Length: 369
Image (cartoon, rainbow, N blue to C red):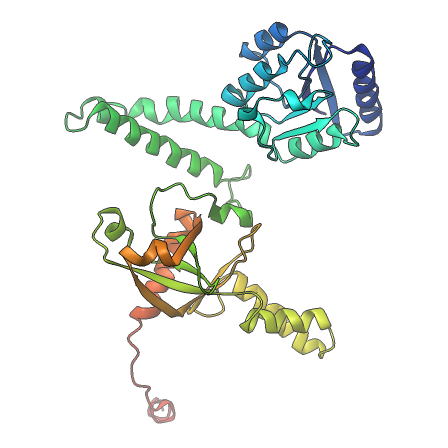
């Protein structure tokens, strides 16, 4: 049975009793996961246990006032800061003095939420939902990534490090970046293989990087035209952008899912009034579009949060002057470089087709006999 290790930092005995009662109730009614709580009431205790690398947690519930001072104490801020700066698990601040949360720590995300103690909020359900994604097991101190890094260090780098130690051309900083890329590429190789040694299927959201990491426009960036709200993907060769050679940027339009063939086929299936053969054909077409086997002039992008997705239409492209680009377009996301390479390859293939005259098939067929 899996165990979710939960840190609770709270000094009010009545609140602690409520938490433990809720956890006991959860453990009795759920057969696949058990919550093991560690309860501390003092700031220094919490900091000591968090700084001990032997301790692994999957989540924390933290009170701000740990001295029952009526709001004058906010030592919980130091514990939150320790987690945010050095650790990787979700934190829920549940406190009667949430207004004392330091402004630098107050931004709420999927991993950090602030709730008043009297609010209707099931922290157990929230933490379990995050735990079930596997994210804490991947990124904690002894998680999947750490295991992969250990394997890479001993099974790969240990046999090839002399290539870097004997390199007199690169600076220490350049060597470090090179080794970081080497390590990340090996982690990527591990992640693409299933436990049965097959290849993993990607989650649709893995195609996007948000917000953009590269400081300036780059191949694979998804951009929105300010005047029209039309979405495009940048397909200028990466070497031109990386070396600052490009004077124009090539963008290709992304047809919205609410138009064209996607709208047509999805509409047919939703209405369900067509003949079965027509519905099956529509379903087959949509699946081929998703697998990018429908037409070489299209490349499918899935929807993700506020990214609409749709079909990259290689017939709809235009060039924009570099100096005008930031005035006319806003960057929304980047496509993962693994997927960008496939898009660029499809784009190149589409425009590299030469074509040739057709033979008289009937004449050639007769000539075989």
